[in-house]
Length: 302
Image (cartoon, rainbow, N blue to C red; front, side, top):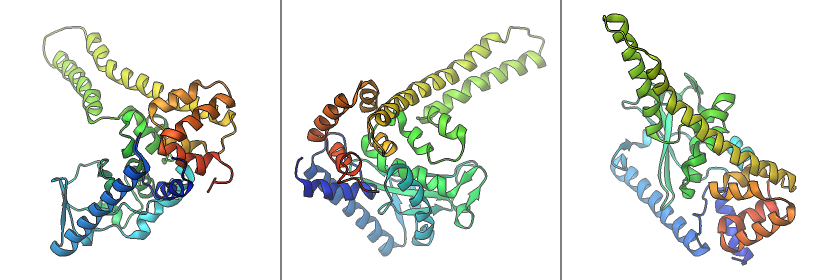
């Protein structure tokens, strides 16, 4: 872990959006990178030879649907300013088939080998904004997911991705929905409340509605409390890093697991932080990379 040439090579991959797994060695990191390159090459070969490629048995894309490089680069300034990485690997495609009425885009990927593909609604081909979505923000959002998928840590996944947004509400409440089930459990009790209200109004039955209101409020309250707990862990870690004199705070937070953020938030002084980060740099490649990019003045890069 103390071989500076290896760490410098790993740091360059980090800058391009390829993040080590927790506990991953340098050799494991490089082997996974090579595996991801093979996956991308096989994907491109399938596109070239067959005129289309199918991903994860769900989506099929063609070369004509590829997102132009200049559109993909729209997000580079945002991800570099926030988290100090610029996508050089993840390709993007427009989906022209049936998609959800409010669907804007998504990232699909495999954290085991780092393969990821950006998918956008076809309306974005000639428009920088559609409905409530900004193309630049959406691409940057999904590229954050593409990089952080290595951490396999969903607790704050949406929080960091939504920091690319210009909307105050999305930045602060976007992390309420971290699983597909969250949206279902958010809407389902509301539909029951609506059904109960209609039943009482349109029939001769009379029953109190307050239990339905409580039922409808329980899961939204849980989402808000969970979001508050997660954001609080980030803010406490952020406050400490600033107090300890770290200038590149957001890039460091972005590369941490939830458990690491909680530890950072509990450190009492710079000495404790130095002890913790040096210990982490010895056993975690992610932290060794952060050491030369964000902590050590000689290795600190923009």
